[in-house]
Image 1 (spheres, rainbow, N blue to C red):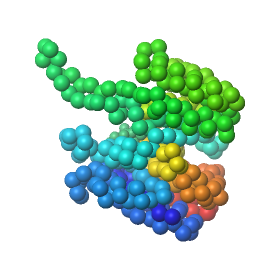
Image 2: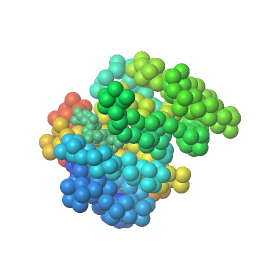
Image 3: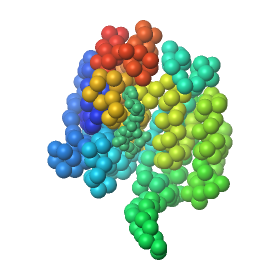
Image 4: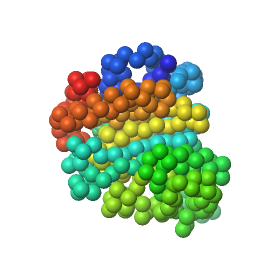
Amino acid sequence: MLVAVFAGDGIGPEIMAQARRVLDALDLGLRFEEGLVGGAAYKAVGHPLPPETLDVAKRADAILFGAVGDFDCDHLERHLRPEQAILGLRKALTLFSNLRPAKVFPQLAGASALKQEVASAIDLLIVRELNGDVYFGEKGMRKTADGLREGYDVMSYNEAEVRRIAHSAFKAAQVRRGKLCSVDKANVLETSQLWRDVVIEVAAEYPDVELSHMYVDNAAMQLVRNPGQFDVIVTGNLFGDILSDQASMCVGSIGMLASASLDANGKGLYEPIHGSAPDIAGQGKANPLATILSAAMMLRYSLGMAEAADRIEGAVAKALEGGARSFDLGGTMTTQQMGDAVLAVL
Ligand SMILES: NC(=O)C1=CN([C@@H]2O[C@H](COP(=O)(O)OP(=O)(O)OC[C@H]3O[C@@H](n4cnc5c(N)ncnc54)[C@H](O)[C@@H]3O)[C@@H](O)[C@H]2O)C=CC1
Ligand SMILES: CC(C)CC(=O)C(=O)O
Ligand SMILES: [Mg+2]
């Protein structure tokens, strides 16, 4: 099986190196092909998502992605910015279903931004729609009638887009605790009204799943007040982006949250939910566990290697139990030492 490996920018190559060490140690017979993405790709060949990279992504059975983002590129036209690499891959491969699990490792409950007893109850899955919303609507700059500069980004969803992510979320809830909370802003946004209507329609096909609805502002608050109430949350692209970063601090650190971005056939791109962290890049301070856990998700969801995925997840838990702590978790271990700790268990 072929895995496309796109390390990207900032801490991307540092965290990816540790995930590769873990995969190599398991000796699973995987083939790896690397590709340029993001600012690194722009600087090398003038585009954040070169055709050669897209070609590898299409040929591969799964994609492991580090992170993109480089402040040197902030002056570029938007279509040349590093972030277009990940947005472009999600769109080109129709990776519409983004699964972002947030579960507290018992060893880390003390690292959570929440009280330990509140944090300990967290075991939720955010199902984020990834191909629509304000990220992909028409956008631009224009002048108002009185000559003011005005930026705009159109937020829209059509019913087919909502229906397919709703099915993903109901199916995920069926194999978890059977509870789905749909998060929107239907009190203000037409996009959200359609979202809510369609989710209710789809619910008729899943009588075994208990559906509830929550406005996104309340959901942000409830994630801090009582996160244990959530099983599966389904939401749009923008709200899911924000809520998942928030959920990461509830479980301890953004360096811990993995994700899968899946198409309708289970092909996927796997990446930590965080970005290229330019503030710590090159310092050996990045926590590689989110990327290592993303590799485990890849084995489970796209490559049919659930046993190997279990081994990686078990090794991460054991490493944490043994005291492995990077800087974001209140420790002093470097990126490489965190990788060493996982490998030592494996
Ligand atoms: N999928 C992707 O490639 C994403 C790319 N980005 C891009 O990344 C760049 C930086 O964005 P930010 O808003 O700063 O978000 P970020 O997620 O890169 O960093 C936010 C904060 O979390 C810390 N952090 C992130 N990952 C960490 C890790 N593994 N271990 C320890 N600490 C970690 C960073 O040091 C920083 O203080 C931007 O160019 C942004 O567009 C942001 C999010 C996702
Ligand atoms: C960098 C963005 C394109 C996306 C993002 O923040 C995310 O997917 O979490
Ligand atoms: Mg994000």
